[in-house]
Image (cartoon, rainbow, N blue to C red; front, side, top):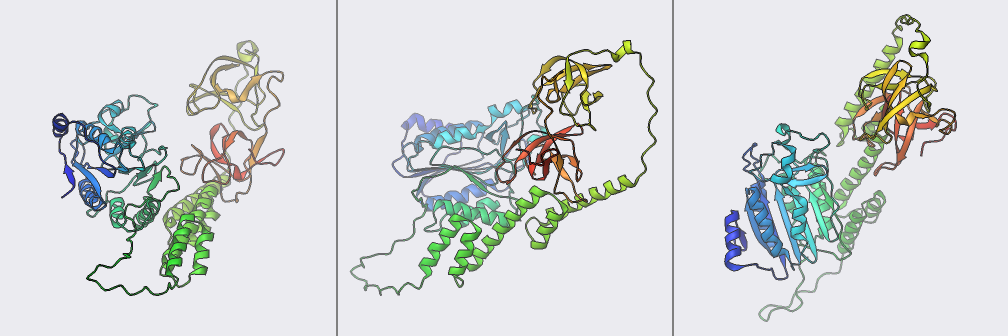
Length: 556
């Protein structure tokens, strides 16, 4: 393959450096293409090497000076990046393509060589190659630094990995990144999700790249938008590519549009003057303007202006997808039976139809269970406990009191500083004489947990609901109730500020006594998400369906 350098081992790379010294690329395009398929400790991947070979050939046709490397060990990947860093220095465009396994650890991303074992989470930094190192390898390019990662596949290393530190999080897929200016990092699947390896010769992402990367006159931002739409459609909405980073106002083309010749050769006849413009050039310009804006109004304006354009069906498809995605976002934020019914009525065969039916049935089953539970007679009350002598446990132990707990609720005392720890007892609203000992900050909680003693009860309680007796804390904060939820539905409390997080509790319609600690805006949602506590359970809920019991206002 002319113009493609095959470098198979780190030894070859080191030998070349010794013999000829550093080689700096002239102004132009350079690319490092890596496909890791033959993993030694886990099952092999069929497509990365195929994807790398095919993309290297396409990039060569686009005038890139290519270094193609397949099935690299950790030492070979490090040597390849060192060598490529020299090639990228002073180049116009520097591109790295990687296909294979990747992993995210504590928010940092790593590419996995074929000889990695990753028996412990602490081995990741030693055996894998950080994405930050790849970014440093391309930063010497002057116009465009481009990193393409088809490395978001389900990771088989995680299942057998020993976790040494409980706070070292290992994510699904790769974590989002914030690259510097003039740098794009393109993922085959957006941060936190996984990509398919594909059933054919190429992964869905590589196949879409190969179909479009050599299109003349396709600006690079539009290239990735088309790849995004094709992969999303091919995978039935399961895989959504994403590009992180931004470019300046200057347009960049990997293959510029062919320029018409203005001077005929001596042995050729002068070309016939082109026919008058029939409007197709204007329609094409309006099409690219519409997809650049990517709004419902822009697509509808295009269809009104160019109803007979060859692009009409494509624009209708983009418009339908945009409307569906907007509706689905609203539906999942509301997360009610009625909202999923509304989506299914509009898009019975849509991308999210199966998920909508599954979630709707779950909500219906929960509503039915609550109805049956309400119809079941309450058990006979437990006998009253024997009275205790006041000198045993009745005397107060401290100067603190329970605050901010509604009249029908309690403040739980637990065996450890965590809401999932077993309870050792409880304290009623307004309880005074609470003694407080050591307080500690606990990850995931805004307020400390404190050792407490109240009458015969001792353990740990959340300090959000404790204050000095006699008004040391201002008046108790307002509590909230559920609004806008149908009688057969619920307000979901989740483990994080988004419908992507799991449900930790379901607050019934008109549920009250909900304590709200803080609210914040979340990208993609029109209403804020708030940290809430209800019946001793803490989590996140959308402010869309909460109102103050005294003021009627939404939390802010």
